[in-house]
Image (cartoon, rainbow, N blue to C red):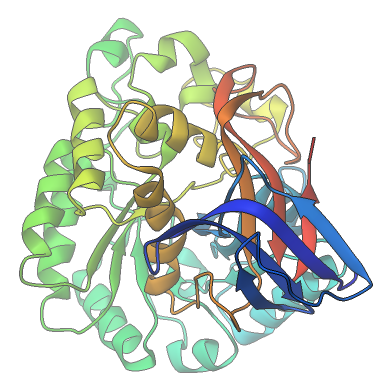
Length: 433
């Protein structure tokens, strides 16, 4: 994992930051991209050089995921920062934003610094840029706000009570004001708990068949409508997490016409599956918000196509096997997603013709990086954060590097194989043929 000089040869460079699409070589020295040059061009190369033949591969900016749960501290039987990092780099990610719903919650500077210390320790083995978020409210209770100024100065990437909606309107408005002051995004989990008795399954035909109440779509719609209103004139960058309804997409579409600081993300499982997956995969297809109808799935894809939804984020949510083995109404919601996300994008968005490969990469690297103010792009002098992948070959997902395996995509063969991930000039993952 030490620094070395690397030359990536004959790869097809795709950079959504500039629209670059060409066959070229990339010379990496220490942590930076030193030179981009044509394969036929003769230049002096260092003696201590690792050469990667990328012929037939895409070379793109490393992927950026703004919504992951690494479960440490407190829930390490599900995932550790170390195992989460291994899963991330295997999926082509060079930067992830870690959610704050750990135990204890990342709601003060001391806990934030403990997490940052652990990240530095993990990075000695697995280079991955891990940016911890802080919670909006103390202990995720939604009653009092955290110290946005202190947490921001200490390195919090953003603020979120992800997993728990913020129901106090006055508190949320003040959070938006404080977030705008420190220039950090606020990410929101949009499900009104007052409308839900049994979460994780869409209230619809499948819940009726299973005799479960389920989660009605209005739980998401009402919260999105409310929070768009509260965000007006605050100047806050607001990220609506894991959209699941067609109405939610339309609310975001209309809101962005007058407030460009409203942003939205969608997960690969929500654009790939419908509520019918619960009948096939059981608890492995249970998540919050739930998978919904085919009409909703297609609306999410349309939102990606027209730019309403700017970001694809995994909501990587590991759970232990014994937890997911519980009955449907008692098992925890959530699935892992870091290792399958790129493949699902290629398989279900690019190959059917919904997005070009460049557009997919924009939503998986450049757009999320821009929201969090992270440099992203392939240019001379830039940080060497890259992923090399083969979009035309398939991979069988029969095991995962994550500590957990709670995924409906376990055992599936999907297009798109990550061959190497380079983070800060260090090879973080390599699976070259």
